[in-house]
Length: 148
Image (tube, rainbow, N blue to C red; front, side, top):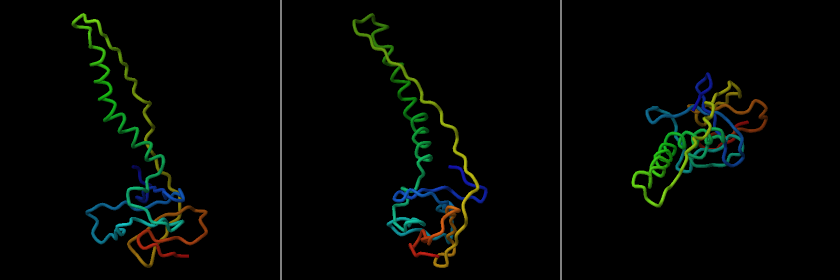
């Protein structure tokens, strides 16, 4: 997934569907605060959701396309080849025909340099970006505390 020039990853709240950006964490990051078992809190609506549910619609569509093209596509291509060979070599009474047409390849995702940075006193190591026009409180991703 592409990052903006500051290294932020675009995310989307599964509840309010607003987008924000977060610095991606890796398991090697020392001192990076992780969410509780319930997951992250949305910076806009404050509702908590599991870590794996914050992908944008574009990210999910791209990932699904990649799975189809790289995993399912070769299987369907092999199936079509096998189906087309049934009955051809033995001169049998049954013949089968199949055709595989791969889906159109999606353009790679790109990331723009938009949104304003927000830091949290409650969790100083957490920095996010929210919509430029957002004029309300922002909730901490880790604890859900509102910051004005």
